[in-house]
Image (cartoon, rainbow, N blue to C red; front, side):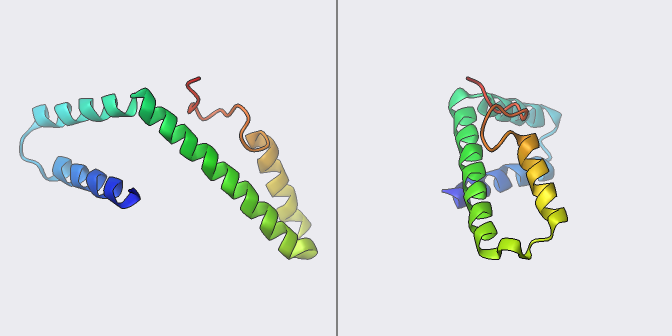
Length: 101
């Protein structure tokens, strides 16, 4: 599925960049892309993918932390904790504007 989406996006981008159809066709494609991006189903899918990514990143961080243990310098550990605090602990209300609920 990911490869199909990447192909379609690449195809659309190539068409927009390589087209000689003029400004009218560009504006039409831009309007269609905006409508797709503002579709609630697309927004929910993007939000779900973001939450899933954050969840897997948290699990990976925990797994790596357990394996590495005390080998990580304190300076890096402090930075990671600072980032986690700033993000909100992984999944609470974020400031990215992806939540539409």
